[in-house]
Length: 216
Image (cartoon, rainbow, N blue to C red; front, side, top):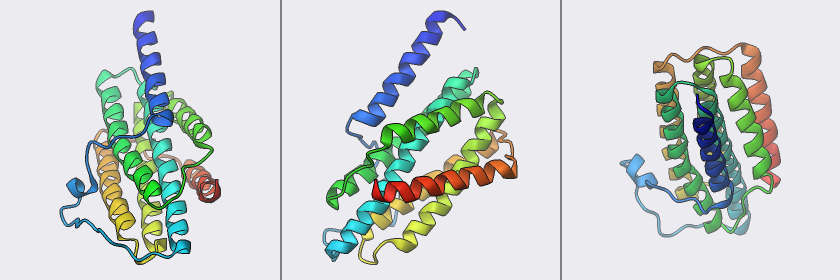
């Protein structure tokens, strides 16, 4: 790779990172375009405690999407395969819809995003890039395992949401459908099965992020 192409990729990655962390997220799709059964909800019956709880849960999901953006950008930067790089960048763009959905819902609920978003992004980017140095199939393995764990995490949040928070529920269901598609795409491209120790480490770091992001 020429020095010029290296710099182009570096500045492209940096620009997308700044856009994720600083620019208002804009969705290319709405949850209704993912879920055919989606019905817009114009009225909710949530008390203050329920709204606060829902906002905290959606803040966690927003952090998860920050991390997904960073992870896939790290994978994209580490691979020498142009087709695979485009695959990771496209997955990142699809996750950007989730970023916009969760941010909009947090605003509707009167909440705020995590104060530690730059830290979450930097850590996930480093993991994505370093895992990619072990080969493209390892990057794909990280992607598949990440999406599997995110699906399980979304299931737990669907159980924790207040019963009356139908809008957040529909957003999470739409996100879950996309995550499953990403995991399947990674598997089709030859994702490696990661060692059990890596699975456990990913789960432990996700638990730490979840507990922290609920409050911060």
